[in-house]
Image 1 (cartoon, rainbow, N blue to C red):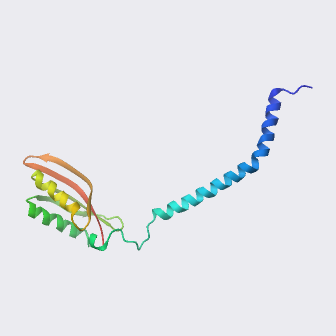
Image 2 (image 1 turned 90 degrees about the horizontal axis):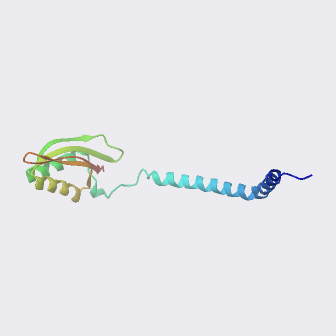
Image 3 (image 1 turned 90 degrees about the vertical axis):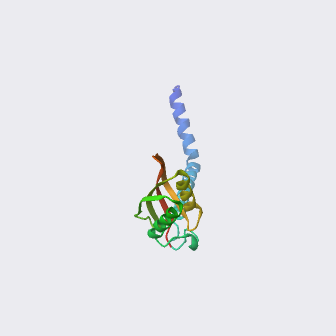
Length: 147
């Protein structure tokens, strides 16, 4: 009796699958343990230590009011109008201050530059510069690290 080619192929495939099963099972087990280890390490890296400082102590600010005071002081010295400045809800050790200033283009850009360059550390997370009659208006969110 002659076996059909499909039956021969099916039998050969099953025999090959039985021969490779131990190696495949070992490889899949190793892969699963490597993925679990990677997930554990990624979780450990994502969550910083609670007592770890984000920045050097002299680069941190005491609170959102200090950032607002700094913006107002720089604006007064540069002839820039502070239209609005208010602290937003912070995220952990960060404080966010939303502000809007207007004035001559050179003075507004110089104020934004001095905020980011000088201590304590303040970064503009989002900002928008738009032309207005007589100058420009900068609307921004400043982020700083709390002490």
